[in-house]
Every structure is written in C-alpha cells, then in structure tokens.
Amino acid sequence: MRVDLLASGSKGNCCIVRDGTTCIMIDCGTTRKYLKGAMEKAGVHHDDIDALLITHDHTDHISQLKLFADLPVYSPVELMETDVFAVRPMRSFYIETLKITPLALSHDAPHTTGYILENGQEKLVYITDTGYVNEKYFPLLKDADTIVMESNHDVQMLMHTSRPQYVKARIYSDEGHLNNEECAEVLDHIVTGKTKMIFLAHISQQGNTREKALEETMKVLRQRTDLNPALKVCAAGQFEILTKGETDEEMDCGTVFCSAGVERRAECTGLFKEEKRNRDKAE
Image (tube, rainbow, N blue to C red; front, side, top):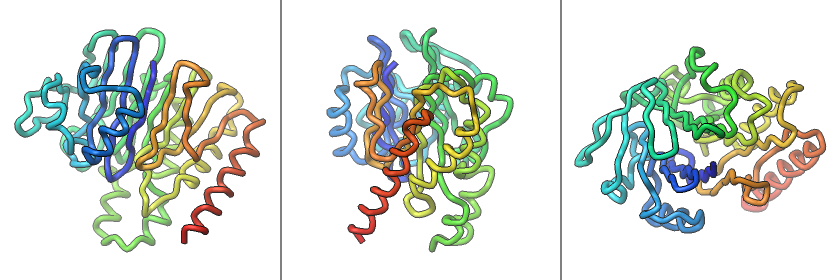
C-alpha cells in the first residue's frame, strides 16, 4: 500500500492511497494549481482515481471538489451539487481491493469522519481535525502499518498567537484539534511493532512548529521498547509531499523526521538544528 500525503494543514489537505490497481483520494483541499502539480509529482492522474473520500465539509478539505465530481464520492455529509455515497461510523464498505471503515471524530463540522483502510495485508489509519479520539476506537486503530494523525498545536504557542480568544478556545476544545501532547498520547496507545510510518498532520503554522510536534511524539515513543526499529515519524509541511512506499527507496519523509532506531537520534537532532538555522537566515 503506497500513501502520498500531498497537502496537510489549514491551507489544504489531500492524501492519495494506492493498492495495486486501486487508487483512492482522501479530501481534495488546497489550490487547483498546487493539487494538479502534486498529483503529477506523485505519479497519479485523474483517471487513475477510483473514488474520493471526504472527511468533512470545511473548505480546506473540499475546495477542489468540482475537479473530482465525476468520481464516486463518499462523504459523511451532503455536498452542494455533488451526489455522494453516504458513509456512517463503523459501517465498513469496499472500494475495489480496499476495506474502508469510517470513524466518528469530534470537530466543529457536522459528522467529521476519520478512516481506516485495509487490504488484508496492510492497514492505514487516517485521523485529522478532531478535538479528541474516542478510546473505544483504540483496539481498531492498533497494528496499522501507516498512521496519519493530527498534531495541530502547541498549547502555549496557540495561546500566544494574535488570534481572537474565541478562536483559541475553539481550537483547544473537544470540537477543535488535537494538540501535540494529545496526539502523542493517542499514538502511544495505538502504535505497535507493525507500525512503519507515522505522518504528523495538520500542523498549525502559527500555533505550532513541526519540530515541536515531532519532539513531543518522539519523547513518548522513545520510552517504548516494542517499536519497529525502522519506524519513521514525519512532521508534514503544508505543501510538502510525503510518501510511504513499498520499499525504503520509495520512502520520502520530507525535511523534518525522526526514526525510532537509536542510531538515527543524532540525525534527528541535527535536522532540528538545520531547520532552525534555515529559519534564522530567512528572518
């Protein structure tokens, strides 16, 4: 199962999942120009896509819906001028070779949904835009090969942004977004030795940094002794394409990532320092 995270954040979200002849797009936010260019870089064409899954109807997840209106669209809510197949929590369905199980999330959009995708050999968990993850789902989420999990904000950074107080309260609430600590806690419950790749997603550009999100998750996971030594944890940039492929050669973790293997920790620290130097130069 190949996973290409094409865009992740408040300016747009899109993910491509491929399994043999099956190709599914999850959400279709961001700009038309960027999305077409990212699809080309990932080697996927419109005609390759078998279906579009929608998580919820916020603009950063459906802004390019018209481009894919000719495809079967699966959504937890009705979408204007688009016929959809209704999805409901825990009512699994199949698209070609993939079994898809919708999960109820908690966000300030009606019926926001996460997804588990399985093909009998591999498993993908896709959860963004939620104030919390219900513990009843933890057994279902375990043993995923790939996890896309929201790590939206650092609480202190969020509270020191210039955003209005009601916006901060919404983001921090149970109908907002997972913060770094909450993301790490969920991952600690569901990551097993089978997990090969974690994408930390929907990272706030004002209320977080990719380094902070990654450090918080690694602080928790490094206490574990049962992890896959080849596990990679990647912090997604808004417009950075990240790939989990079939082989190590097909993996692209982007510019901010860490490995669970002890031998890679020094490299991880070096990446943080390099990222800081680049930001300092830009400023």
